[in-house]
Amino acid sequence: MLAVIFLVLLLLLVQAALPGRYLSAQVGNDAQMGPRDDLPEPSRELARSRRALANLQETLPIFLVLAVLSIILGEEGWLSVLGAAMYFLARVAHLYFYMKGISPWRSVAFLVALIGTLLIAIPLVPHLWD
Image 1 (cartoon, rainbow, N blue to C red):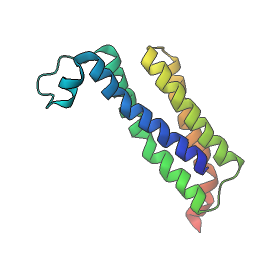
Image 2: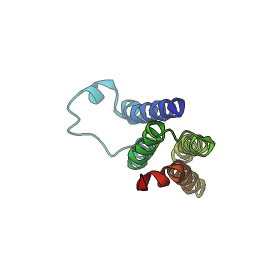
Image 3: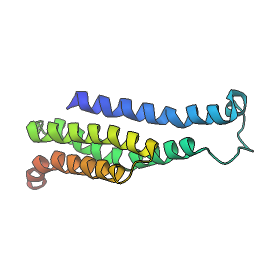
């Protein structure tokens, strides 16, 4: 489980770097390092990378809380690990589909990641009554 958490955090770092990369490509490094007061409308890639990052940031806290709870409560069985792996792989696919503008696969990837999160949560339910 810990390895998947680190992979998801690595994905977060990659996604956090993408908007800066696309902004530098659009306006140049000098404008990127400046105050950014008068930037043009974002390019398609920049806008998509920002939205994809925001989408990951919406689901990441839930995943991390459930994954850490599964470690703390000793619920790192096959269902939790499968759910975490599904979350990671689906979030990678979501990023790819988002950046390429491929619908409806972006939404399918989001749904698979959500199902992965639910799989992590299932073994934790009995601990609600402990």
